[in-house]
Amino acid sequence: MVLGIGVDLCDIGRMEKAVAREGFTARVFSKGEIEYAEAHGEAAAHYAAAFAAKEALAKAGGWGLGAMGLDSCEVVRTERGPRFEFSEAFKKRLEDEGIKKVFLSISHEAGMAVAMVVLEG
Image (cartoon, rainbow, N blue to C red; front, side):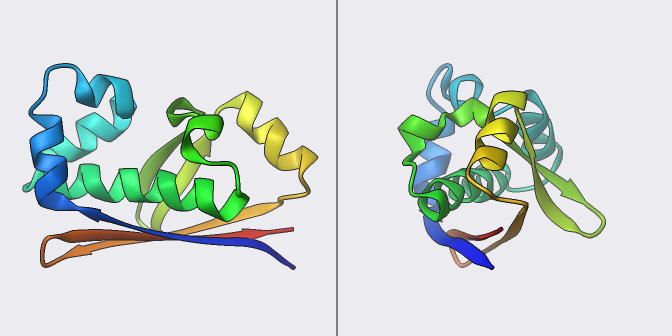
């Protein structure tokens, strides 16, 4: 059963300006997300996609990004596509709310990054 759906758009140009600010990436992204973005062309697009993914997750769960916490999850890219890795505390929260699977899709094109999250119970 679908328990939540969330979608978010992030402007890549806006993210490019944000990541240029001192300390922004370290506050918002995990070490793995930073390494991935910086290792690929157009790093801001990858940062924007990861940020949109976290926002989409927060919307899908109805938690809000501040209450969920930026450090509760990390966007990991795999051969089969992107997925989340969760902190132990957030895994417990998902379990307590009956969420068994979290599906993530991300893309970026024409100056925008988009992410969609589906929560299944």
